Each structure stands twice: as structure tokens, then as C-alpha cells.
Image (cartoon, rainbow, N blue to C red; front, side, top):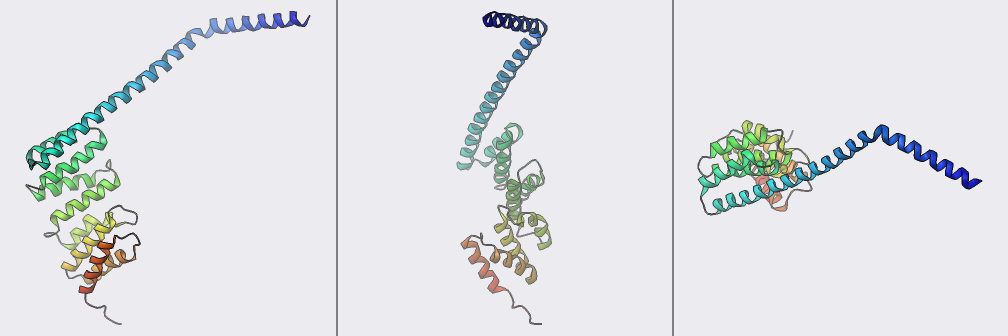
Length: 217
């Protein structure tokens, strides 16, 4: 008797499944097609992106070789082309290298290119700070301390990748401007930062020795 009930239950289940299939089969098939198409599309996108990255990498290497051969104008043009069309990561690197090549012919023009990178919020923080440093290095001999402060202060924040270099440059700029108070401020930050590189710490100590003694109250 139990076997008969089992057969009836099985028949009922089959009948229900058939009704469900008849009612929703088109939707199920459409969903399956969409899933397959989506997976295929994503794989295709990944392949194309990998191809673009590989092509950009090869083009970047060719441009770097031109630079090593002192063909700076050609290298600058090659990096400019990459900056215009390469994937995001290579685009930023190409912009930095393009500015470096421009510096061999026109430091002020290169500083402007670096300034554009530093002001671009789509660029990573470290790359922005690096651009600030590079621009400041090009104009340091002609810029006033207030202008250098405006350029470099964002890169001096705790945790910034290039804070040590930025602080040293500001200390030197303040010293040149005979602003001992400002110079001492940056030198103290260098001295009190446990991550300051030893060579930079030594230079900071040497500069500290050149400052006039603090007046006693």
C-alpha cells in the first residue's frame, strides 16, 4: 500500500513540475541565456583589457628606451600618446614621464605638466604628491617660500609617501628666505618622525646647525 502512495506522490510531483515548466520555461531559458551571455561578455571584457594593458606596457617600454637613448623629444611624444589613450594606470605613469622628458627642454613647461597631475583628483594621492615634489624641484631656485609652501604642504601630511622630501625642501626654502622659525618647524617634524630616512635626517641636522640659536625669553 505504501508503494502505491509513493507512486501517486511521485506522479503528483511530476505533474506539478510539468505545470511549472510549461508556465515558466521561457523565463528560465531567457535567464540561462542572460547568465551565459553575461559570463561570456565579462570574460571578453577581461581579455580586451588585458590586451590593452599588454599593448600599453610594450609602448611604455619603447618610449622609455627612446629616453635612455637621449631622444627626449621622441620620448615625450610617445609618452604623450600613451597619456591620451592608455589604460588608467599607464596613463598616469606616462603623464609623469612626459613631464620628465619636457624638463630636459623647458623646466617651466614641465612644472606646469606636473602641476596638472597634482591637481587631478582622478590620480592617486601618491602620484599627486610625487608630481608636487617634481614640480617644486624644478622651480625651487626661483620660487618664494610662501609659494613653495603652497605647492608642497599637502605632501607633508603624516602618512604621505613623500612627506620626508617635502619637509626637507620646505626647510631649505625657508632657510634661504631667512625664515628661521619656519625652517625650524620643518626640521623638527623631520627629527620627530621615526620613519625619516637616515641620510635625510643627517642633512636636516646639518641644516639645523646653520640656524641661529633660539632667543631665550
